[in-house]
Length: 443
Ligand SMILES: [Zn+2]
Image (cartoon, rainbow, N blue to C red; front, side, top):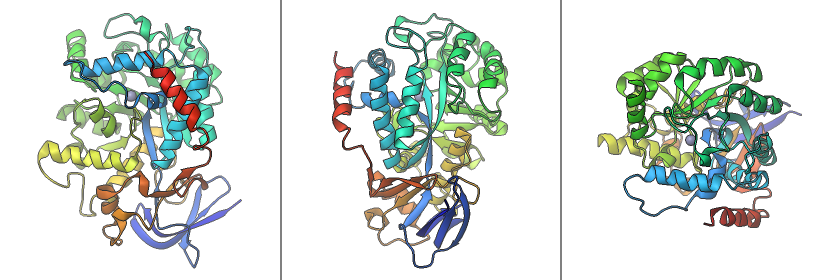
C-alpha cells in the first residue's frame, strides 16, 4: 500500500527543502516528493544513517574494563572482549543484539552492516546459530541488516590462532563456505577480519570462492591500520604497511570498505580515493579504544568517500559520531569547521556519511530521493539545539548541539519503528538484557 509522509523540512541531495511530502510505494521506496498541504508528520526529516560497522555483542561490554592496564590498553580491552565473547550463547546474543539494534534505531541508524565474527558455539561446534541470532534480532527490531560473516584464520601475522579465538576461526575457506551456505537466505557481504587474521596472499582465493553466496555488488569490509602496533607488525612481517599490502594483493575498488584506516598515510589515502573505496570511521569507538585520528578532513576535501560506524556500540548516536568526527579534526589541526563547505557543516557531513554508508551496505538508501528506501530520521520541533534556527543553519545546529534525545520518529522502508523516541518492546525486555550483561561480565 502506498503511504504519504509530510514534513516541515526535508534534507534532500539538493539541500534542505520546506513543506514537502514523500510518497512511499508498497515496497517501502520513495516514489516522489510533492507539496505537503495541511498534513504534518514531523519537523525535520533526514535520511536514516547507515551504520557501516558494528559488533552488536560488544554492546554488553560498555562500561566494563575502565581501569588502567599499563601502556598496552587496546590489547587488554581485547582480552576483556574475549572473556565475554567466549561465554555468549545464541539466546544471549539475540538479547544483546536486539538491544543494540533498538538503540541504533533510536540513535538515528536505520540499517547496519554487522561485522559478525562470533561464529561457533561456546564449545567450539560450528553452525550458523550465532549468525541467525543476530539476523533474528534485526528482524524483530526492524533495522535493515547486511550480515558480514567474518573470515578469521590466524592469531596474528604468521601466528597460529589462540584458544580464546576458537569461536571466530575457520580452518579453511571450505569450512567458511559451509557457513555461508547455511546462511543462504540472508543478505550477505564478505569480511576478511584483518590482515592480522587473514594472510593477504590468500584474499583473492577467498573472494573467488565466496562470490556465489552473495550478489555481485556485495560489499567487502576489512579492519585495517587501526592500531600503530598492527602497522608495525605488518611492516616487520611483510615489509609493507597493511594498506599497501591489501592494495597489492586485491586491487581496491568501490566494493571495498576500509574500516578505521586510522594510520593511513597521505599516499595511501590517495590510492583509496582513486580506487573509489570507502573509509569507515568509527569516531566514538576509536576514541574509546585510543586508536588515533584518521586524517578525515584532508581525505574528504580531496573527494574521498567516508561512512560511519558504531563499532563497539559503547555509545550509539549517529549525531554524536559526526560531531566527534568533526571535533577530532579540529583538535588535530587546531582549526575550526574542518568538514564544512560553503553549504555549512551539517548538510554536507550528514549527506556524505549517508552516501558512503549506503555504498558500504550495498543498499539503495542514504538519501531522500525517488527510488531510494524510505529510511528516515525525524527530529522534533522542540529539540533544544534546533530552536531559533531556520533552513540555512538547522543542520549545523543539529551537528553542533544535537543528540539522539532530539530524535522523535524513525522509519525503515516507510514503516515507523521509533515513535516519540520509544521502540515498541524495548522497555519490557530491559530485565533480560540487564541480567545477560551482568552474567556475561562476571569474572
Ligand atoms: Zn570492528
